[in-house]
Length: 119
Image 1 (tube, helix red, strand yellow):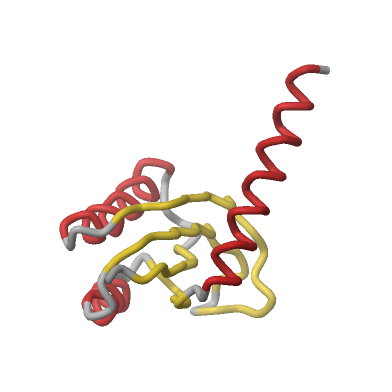
Image 2: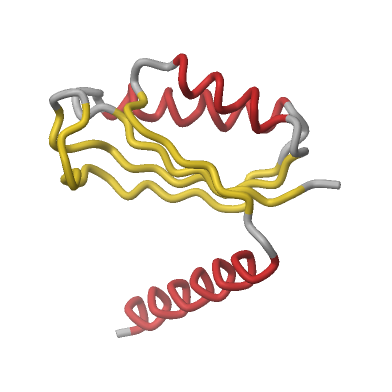
């Protein structure tokens, strides 16, 4: 059975746009190679960190929401830890309430975007 997970990672701010895209593609590819399914993906861009990490005060935030077998998470987290471009990450298994909340939030955001286009 596939479980739904959400991983947010912070990449070092010295990456170019192409390097950031390459990093995201690497993790997306790992998930898809494990017969996983990407449900949602968001790039939050460059944000200020609450406290310095590795002497950096900003970082590129990226969210991946996906369905995959539970055993794969250890492999994914090992790959994230090995990647020197990632300075922090958090993976969370989503329960049915978190999944429903995320879907509702995406639907609300889509309707707001639709209204903005109409105006």
